[in-house]
Each structure stands twice: as C-alpha cells, then as structure tokens.
Length: 148
Image 1 (cartoon, rainbow, N blue to C red):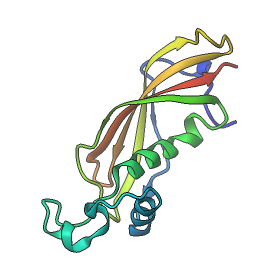
Image 2 (image 1 turned 90 degrees about the horizontal axis):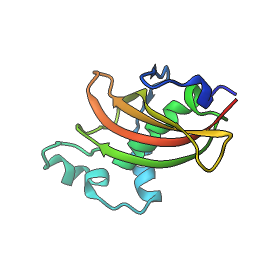
Image 3 (image 1 turned 90 degrees about the vertical axis):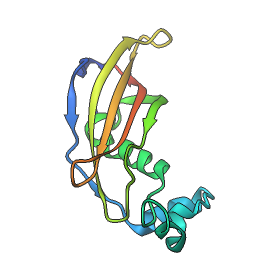
C-alpha cells in the first residue's frame, strides 16, 4: 500500500502532499445540500455579497474533509485502522469557489497502542493553504496506524 506504517513515521516528520484540488461551486453547493446545511453564506450569493466576505464561502466541513482526503494517498492509504479524533480545528481565512487547497502534514506525537499491540497511535497536524500560500485550515488528527 502507498500509506505509511507506524514504523515509518517519526515525530517531527513533515510531508508536503503533492496533490492539490481546486474547489468548485458545485462541490460547495452539493456538500451543503447533502448535509442539509442551509447556511446562506454557502448557498445565497445575494446574501453573501453583503457580508464581510463579499461572496459565498466554502463550507468548512467540506474543506476539512477535502484536506484529509488529500493526505490519503501518501500517508494513510491501506495503513490505518481508524481515525480516532479531530482536534483544534481552525479556519483562519475563508475558502472561496475557485481556490485550490494544498495540505502539509506533520507528525506531532506517537505512542504504542494499549489495546492493540499490532498498532500505534499517531497525532498529525495538518495545515491547508490556498494557491496563494495563505493558511485557510489547521487541525490535528489522531489515527491508529498498522505496524509492519
């Protein structure tokens, strides 16, 4: 598998994920509709144009999910047992239709699993940046990784 095993990781290790993804209006509207999020900041251009943002902004939960997805092929594909939690989620800048999201991951903590000797727990700090390099998302995620 393409993902990293617990044994491959070290605290302080940084991965700049190669893939970026441009977020479309359809992504935002469809995600908001599927999750029944009627927030006019995501769906109503007239309303959003009169806010401090001047236009609709992308649903933050979509941005979070996309950021995790962008890490899978190089980090967790086939090598994690489960994501255990998401912490310290921050959206310091809005994401707009047409922005491209890029993600950087850093291993911030590791420990052996107490419940599964064939696994270890890894805490990752993910930072999402737009095409201008501006930080639009930061969060920590803890996952249970397989050992080799």
